[in-house]
Length: 162
Image (cartoon, rainbow, N blue to C red; front, side):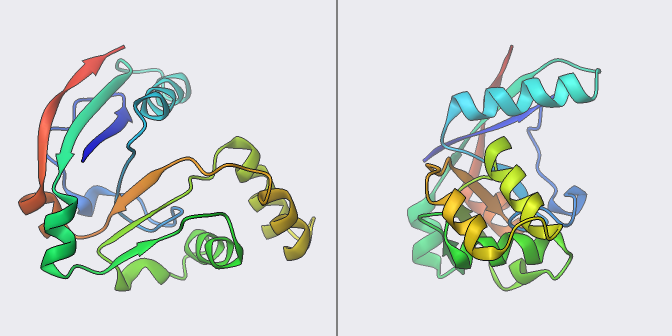
């Protein structure tokens, strides 16, 4: 499986301890199967932190090897109540992600992010949030939470400067 990570730097070595907490799927390394999505991430990072150049890092992940090895994988195929509760808990520091090695599912893009923020602040209730999310088509994000996966099943393939 080919994966992409948008950044303002080349990331040929991944160290999960450098990851930031309280993210959608937990403290891990986030990648996507969608090159265009990684490009948007890279451009956003450079716009918000004006240093470096927008870069798409490219990796190959042996997903079948991870599954065969018995790593704990959580997959969300749609925006639903389970996904919403999981995202909100992690953003609030509840660390529901710690029992998993890899989590995949929809990313909280701008429209989805606004819905989650409104829900978290009490501006809308859960049913309203879920009603809005029902119309969104999930993008793709994969969060790698276990350094063994990075070290054994992931290969850096290079990068593209934008």
